[in-house]
Image (cartoon, rainbow, N blue to C red; front, side, top):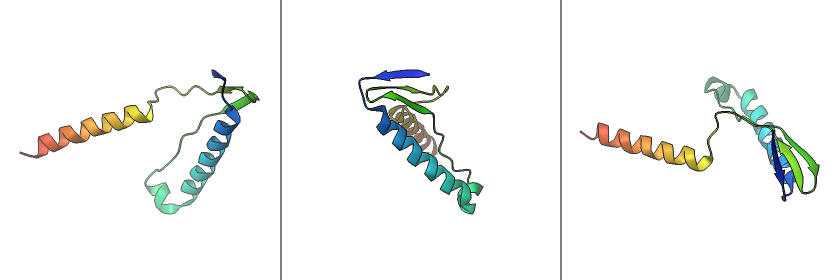
Length: 83
C-alpha cells in the first residue's frame, strides 16, 4: 500500500470507480472482449479528507513513461521499415 497525504483522496476514489464501471462495459461488449480490452484499476481507501491509502500495483509505468517508450518504439519501426 502507498500512503498519500495532503490531497483529497476521495477524488481519486471516484475516478477509480468510474474506470471500474468503464471496464465492466468493456467486458460486456463482444468486440471489446475479443480484443481483450481491459482497464486495470487499483484500490483506493480514503482515511480522511487529506489522507488515504492506494493499492501498490507492481510492474506499472507512468503514462509519460508509456508514451515515451511507445514513441521510441514507433520511431525505431519507422527507421527499420523505411528501407
